[in-house]
Amino acid sequence: MLDTPAAAPLRQTLRDAVGTGQPIQIDASAVERIGQACLQVLAAAEAAAEEAGQDFRIVGASPVFADMATLAALDTLIAA
Image (tube, rainbow, N blue to C red; front, side, top):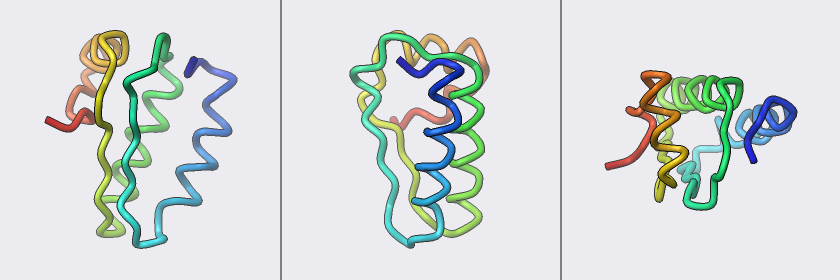
């Protein structure tokens, strides 16, 4: 569950990953619930990774993740 309380730990984990030079790949296949705060964290991490020249992908998006990302106009986060 990626709800509001999960946003701060998610943000810290992604901050630690950005700048390492390693590709960031997130498997979203098990996401049953996601809120706007976590979507914003993911969008910010994608932007930071892009700025750092790192690959950032969200793969295997569950239907819930895909629907919420589309509603928030963040469906570009999902790897094709």
